[in-house]
Image (cartoon, rainbow, N blue to C red; front, top):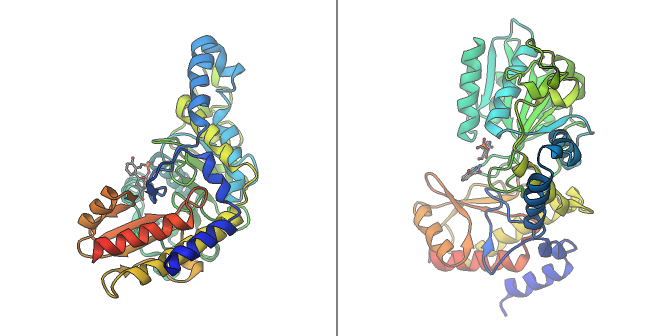
Length: 394
Ligand SMILES: Cc1ncc(COP(=O)(O)O)c(C=O)c1O
Ligand SMILES: Nc1c(O)cccc1C(=O)C[C@H](N)C(=O)O
């Protein structure tokens, strides 16, 4: 056996999270696309079948109360809370990340001093955040200033109302310094809004500890909630009374069944709700979150770094020098749970990898992206992926 193969075996044997793989439905494919769509937890189909057959089929309308449907958005928010370092009562689940970016940004602008007329957005962001930020700025009469996260400290000033940043960059896998950037935003008197799509479930976030104002994230990546599973919105406790939603639907009314023609917001995280929740997806997510029982985010982070370190080592071993350029930072403090490799023929290379059972993804124009979900990815998977990659690049 080659040295990386032996090492992979040893690392798998020493991996305390390895048994968690059995909590998922997986096959012989090396699945390195959990940063786009997480794998299916094995118990979810039966739980969803129960929601459909019994809760919907038998109980019908009674389920809003008896099956806890009505309170699911905040109940499931409280399940996500410990994974992102938030105390209960600050997260509500529902709608898409895009919609929650809109709620968070407009609410942040409304909470900022009226004279602050600029909204900063990560210039390298996943496009939907940029589009929504542009619209939020236009609707509120603010100017949108796209800047890279590194440029944020220099761009902040007394004109800044709010800043929208990504914790981990979707393309490069770079982890941004959430504590330092949040502190800089606060020092300038502005509000910090973070998109956690690529960090929640992969590494510690520390929302409360670092005083983040608002945050959003999806649940279909490292939280394995399923395709299109609802996103979440975090509103820091101290801001909740001032959170003025731009989408004040009846579900966030203080008395939703009072059918009052005028809007009066509910207290707490519920204020982030809009309309009727997407119960089937929401309850599939709730079931999926069971895989986290007894799992520490710190252990997940340690394994994530070990996986990405090992992948880089194997790529160096199996790939001709200079054939790919790693665009993910070497430093652990700057690395999320993915490795992005640049090469001119990335699109074609990824198609060949997928055909050979190594599933990552291609991001325009020249990035091979590999996401490592510590709950179900092993070191032998990593070695195999790097070996097949080396063969396809040769
Ligand atoms: C950083 C980031 N924000 C937002 C989204 C998408 O949001 P939505 O679920 O609304 O499509 C993604 C991925 O799809 C993402 O990577
Ligand atoms: N949300 C997705 C979808 O509906 C289809 C395909 C991919 C996605 C993704 O999540 C992409 C992902 N946010 C990314 O980082 O590229």
